[in-house]
Length: 437
Image (cartoon, helix red, strand yellow):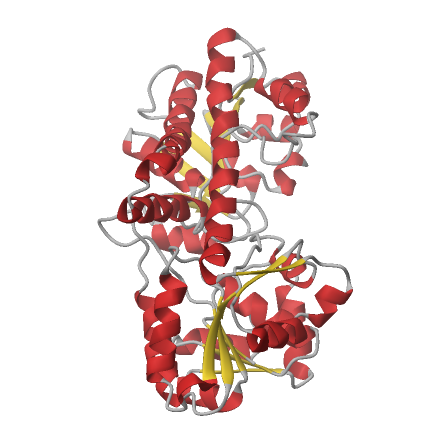
């Protein structure tokens, strides 16, 4: 099989498919990325991926190329894993990368094969691409298209791929269904639910799931605003309502909100597609979900400003975390870096620490300062902001950090730290959605 596109999704999918025994060719237009992967070096941080790449590459089951012609000659199944970012100047998804793959691959598909989309796309895209594949392939109906959305999470992507909670396949073809059952045989045999749907339903499953998760996060952050206004504690509120098995506790952590390369752009693309389909009223709530999420960033800035006395001018602020989430070096739409940049513009001196994302952050935000150790970031700080919930920050010694700061003040914007422990070490502590003391 081939995996076309070797970003966060594609590189993990390629390595995992090789791990379960398939012969895999990974393809990308980025020659530097392909060279790194060919040497067993992932071009991004993802726990477990480096070992998986090394093992499958050494075993001869995984190699890489930049040629779509080679991919067509090699593969019986072609997974398309390219990005669908937000289109510039619009909420809609930019489908140029996926169109380019189909246009480049299609004319070389001379043998019976299956093209499988895994990228997140607006509903209706798969049907359009199915027609395009049939038109381009020299062998006519030998090339089919199916849709198999991904549900992996950065930070747990390897496990999510090897041990998925469900497999969804959009196809009307018994042949395509049989091929994908063969591809995923180890997962199916292990009991993973395997759902066959039409193309449109498979496309919608992904965006509907992401919209629901985004809604749940924004809901608890809306409750955090109310808790701040009333003196209630959003962490206890979330714990109580999460015990209701109709609701559940996952994604009920109030704080700085969501970012990254998926949730924000996916709900906006869903809104844009809803307008095209004439069903925008059914998705109007997603605008408020997006607005609540973005408001979390401003609330964090406001809380930090209050913590240091009402003005950032001349203040030194330490920022713990740059990635949009822990166990990743992805800084796309990072709430942490957005907050840091806004505070910088308001007159503060910012020093950021993030063990994995520091290089990406420095390249995208060169006007901020960076430190290689949390304590170095906190030296002389008037306040410390906890903005990405890396495990190492929960294990910090607050007494040691208090000794190097100018004033031991902490804003826990992720509600992940042991606040009494920090208070006992002499810190003035503020957390979003929680009482001041």
